[in-house]
Length: 599
Image (cartoon, rainbow, N blue to C red; front, side):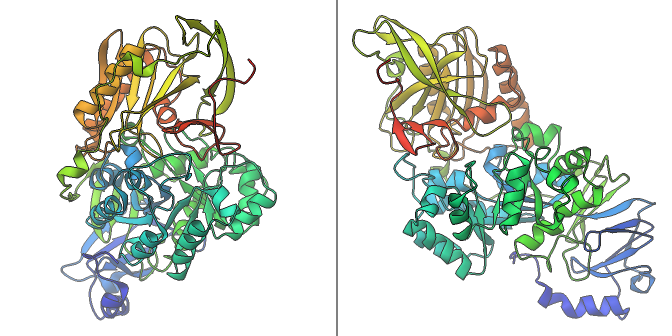
């Protein structure tokens, strides 16, 4: 499928000749224990022979495949496991381009990713998706692209930089690296028979590709049935065992995620470990991992270790991160297992539980050894207009963040977005807030949130209230990463500092900035679409670490609060969000006033 990697059909004669012993392999690995995810066995002493980047022979003795030019690796008793696959993820959440993301995760054993670039789609449209797709195909590992389905994610509730149409989806289905449709977040549209959503899914299914799901509702009744009937083949929004069970009983794959801020594996994997459901329909994924997690903690290796720690059999956990994922996307004959004909993607590890990633081989080439990458990850030439996407229209001041009180009120009852640690949903809270000189002021753990329009340069600012971060003193934090419309989100206790933070991001072309007592404590520049940096992951992670420390210095106590911040405008996940059109009640899918009526 990739322009630089030969298909099975092109190399089949050589694979057959090597397996038969008529020709010699490029690589043979012997002296190890092969983890066979097809049969769920550990085969001691089995050997593999690789030719043209694919497995040619897998069996007890590959000596007939060894010639004078064959590279031979002695596994020294270690396990051979398939390269790890991430079934659902957004590269932009790492704050990195596809090339730098690949460079960050290859040493962790990730050799295949199924990515949905709907973040850049909201900023740059179909052209942005094509740039991500093209850089993905340049990499030494497998990065498949899902065509984003929902930009905007909820029509009528937000305004994006660009909109994705059913015609765009149909066009993208012919691109070489497109594997399916990205998560169908507009589940109310599907349930109500929206013609565009159904047309997008039809174009995908007519192309023989997979429709990604996103059902962020607790309703498992007729609404859920209608959504599944619409064609979504998987879902990663489950947070409880009952969610996982409902998905697989209805023929979906349950994707259980462990990202930087999403901890949804432990609560769902009991469907397998305790209820005994067939594990073949369960898949592990990350969804969103920022650069700090990738550099310091890992990627899919981290998820597999976590699943094992939650009581899952190690080989079953590996199946959920390899063959199950490949099968789901129709690639079981191409990757996901150590078997003849498949891409020679594998890992050498000395321990199936601790899972140290000691050597990573992709397409028959060593790409990482002892946590160090050994190959180049080529960069796409990102054009100037992809780096100039923050259009605020004017310089903001504290008046733009003022919230006037209803006339005659000295206190108000306001609707407040309540952040929930380690989960995507928010709570719909209320708080009695004081009025000072006609303006509503935050109090205690309730402070202001604003969304600054940054695509069309309208100068519009929508204000509201949020709680749960633990901020204290005079501070502000701003980010142009604001799922999914990616305007600018500003949270703060001081209006002048909120303006300063917003203006700073306008100056640098996007990113994240944290201010305290009138000074900038941290800045992560994200010049590409206001979402990504093409600097190395370690450099971006170092700045992200400074950002996390700055948030803590402002009183924040939440785990991975940056991810929570970036989702405050995600108007397809309950309960309360903010958009450029106002405060959004996601239970009712409508714009709502920030003040309680009759309060």
